[in-house]
Amino acid sequence: MAKTYLRLARATRDNAGALYTCEKRTEKSPDWRGEIVVGRFAYRLSGWVQQTKFGDDYFAVKASHKQGGGTLFRSRGLPRTDVYRGDLTIARVEYRLWGRHWTDRYGRTVVSLVALPKEPIR
Figure 1 (cartoon, rainbow, N blue to C red):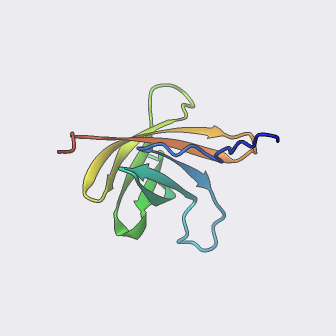
Figure 2: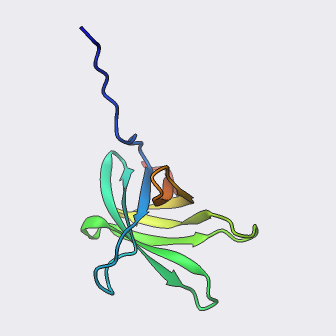
Figure 3: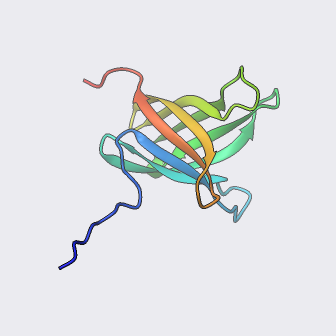
């Protein structure tokens, strides 16, 4: 009898997630959607591309079920850098958020996210 192996479609790690580009249906619908797993709970994320008064692009991020949100700014210093940093609040806990912009093997644009608590959870 042949052995059957199960393969996960994507690894679910704690304090990690991703945003994917999506099609805007209305003017208010998000530019990016995805999810993040924080403290063994998965939250859906919606992201809108905004501009600062200086013309720099950033992500305004909102978590599902009105659990919070935050901002993600592109890191300065290196030209054309694809690294983002920001803050995210989910369920009244503040996280420092890092993201990396890349293209997966299917041609989709992805921002991978890692969230770490700003203060130790007691």
